[in-house]
Image 1 (tube, chains in turn brown, red):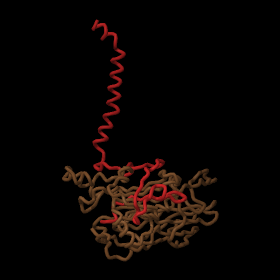
Image 2: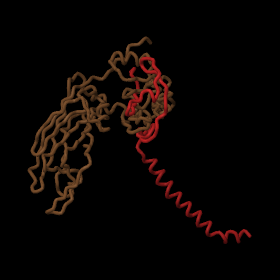
Image 3: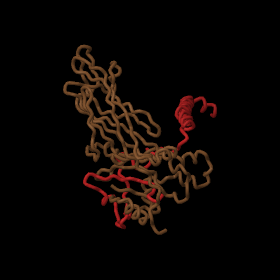
Image 4: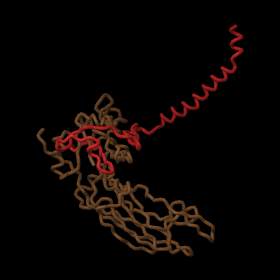
Length: 279
Length: 89
């Protein structure tokens, strides 16, 4: 893994020393590589130029550059984003967010690319006819982080729960209801591919999950200035929710059930201090 | 002669009408769509190398002063390349 930024080697050296970073930080002063990748942030250039007072440009600055406005030293920065490359340098996956302040954490990207290994211990919860092991992609989050809550769901033998598409047959699709709270934005739940269950009495072919399956819920801790202000000084944040579902076997359906879940994440403060280098 | 020519070219006329209508059908909705597009002109998903494309090679110094290339940052399965804005501010 490597990062690329327009910072000088001195800045990167101080930054990695101060934060104990062991992975590679590449220095691209002059932004030559950033330009070759086609990732030079053109909004900065435009906002520093003749169109600086154009409201459209100013609105783009808030989304793509900085909520506090543009400064001349920002010229040369890249649009932030992550590429996953194969051994030959071809792009396998790419992650770029609309708002510059929102980023997928590295662990949430690893989970999305199918990595099973996670440094976070899972919590096992048992409900009626299924067992859930859940863990967050990250134990600590900072404003702007986009993280994943993973739920490994294991239906009891002979039992199935309903997958998306089963609503049209009148079944309750398994879903995760996250309790709304300020500064936490909930993205659509990601479902894996389902199997088809043939329900003989009604001759229905219904999408279900019978084998263990993962559900992935991405959430964004907002990075806006009000969010930063509200979260400053807090030690942690707890996200709560409930897994709602109806389990059935080949003959009967059990009562709809709901498993309460919660994830407590440490709040990582944002780093505002500049690395100490001779300037 | 001139009269004769014009009388002889209904097919050409028809073709040019057809082209005009085609242009209107294609260009008009496109220009309307361009006008009603959202204010943000930047689509970050379109920037830089896309899935399946090879990324450009590079030769850059790392934090320890060592020169690194696309090849040298590769692990056995590939690499993760993260563009960050700055470590400085």
